[in-house]
Structures are given as C-alpha cells and as structure tokens.
Image: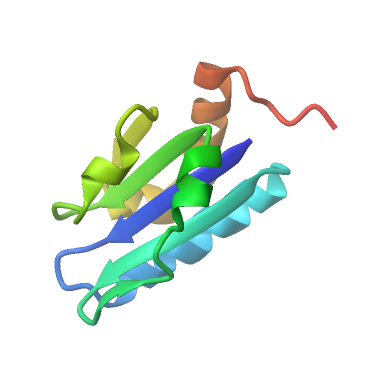
Length: 107
C-alpha cells in the first residue's frame, strides 16, 4: 500500500516529528511505502510531491491543528487522527487502514 501522511501538532516541535517516525516505522514493518510531510513551527518540511499524492492509496492526517493545503488530497481517502494516536498506536492505525481498504501486506 502507498501511504502519504502529514503530521502536525499545536506547538509544532516534538510530537510532529515523533509522529512522523512512528508512522514510518509502523508502515515499513507492515511492508508498505510511506512518505510523510511535517508541518511544524518552521513551516512545511518534506513536502509531499504531487506524484506521491497521486499514487497514494490513502492519506493520513495525524494532526492536532488544521493541515495546510488539504485541497491537494481531493478525491483520496483521508484518515484523520490526532498526533497522539500516531505516536501511541501507529501499528493499530496502519492495520485498521489495511482492513478498511483491503490492502493487507500479503507477502
């Protein structure tokens, strides 16, 4: 499964980047490809290219604030969770998405 994600928290420091790392680890452990953009206190980093968004099976918005430029994700399935969910339960989040989309890693 191809996943595109954006992480953002209210202060835009620690939780933004911890959520990114946890999502990457959980997705890769399940055999999925993931690209993660952060929207922190220094702005947008690792901005998702349009090609990544186009190829994504799902968009995860792990954010406690409004995510900038959400119109980029029009027409894509979007899962909205708090940064705390991405940090504390990333594996559960990924497996729930797999089941809903029927995209379990079959390797």
